[in-house]
Amino acid sequence: MLLWPLIFAPAPDQTRVDQPFIFMVLMPVVVLVVIAELSEGGLDSKALAMLGVLSAINAAVRPLGAGVAGVEPIFFLLILGGRVFGPGFGFVLGCTSLFASALLTSGVGPWLPFQMLCAAWVGMGAGLLPRRFTGRSEIAVLAVYTVIAAFAYGLLMNLSSWPFTLGIAIPGAEDSLAMVPGDPVLENLQRFLVFTLLTSFWGWDLGRAITNCVLVLVLGPAVLATLRRAARRARYLSKEST
Image (tube, rainbow, N blue to C red):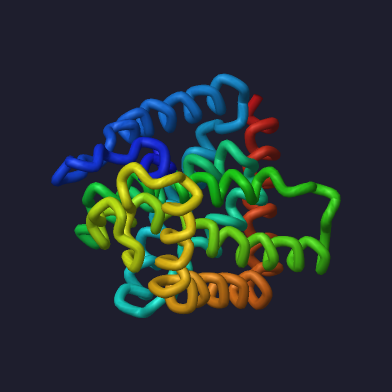
């Protein structure tokens, strides 16, 4: 889905590029993850309620950074939610948060499925981090992961939109940073990396990494404690009701 500019490059004589419709499988995948989590007990009614609350908060917080390069605090709560409630929860939270915020800010477009999937991977990755880290070491690991995830998210989003941003270069072009149909994958990849460094790495990606890393270091301990308290309370009430 994301590597299509390098793998499924258009023919040299093609005058336009149509985004492949592979991303249409995204929503069924999300539904399958939710069903799997429900059937295995990973998401009960209280977890679904928490999913709704965190998605709503992320949707409300994201517009606060609109128009400011890299200020996207949505990843802070996404990573902590995935850390506390697990990878399946983090995956779904990434999808629902981006989808809800897009509806709220009129940001629905062909880029949305890519944003949803990449954010889902960010939340899932946080849930897959080793559980042996606790206290300050846990905050340090989450801060490092936040920086890596911020740059990885920007890299993947650039890859999905790269051919549309610069268009398609004429085969044989040497000075262009656009995708050149028919050229080796490594040469197109080199053009893409230079394009990323010049356009988003020092602005959006670096700002996203710094913003969310600072939030994790400053607010992370308190938010983690709050989310874990809510998770423990939900489990206790669930046992009490049974």
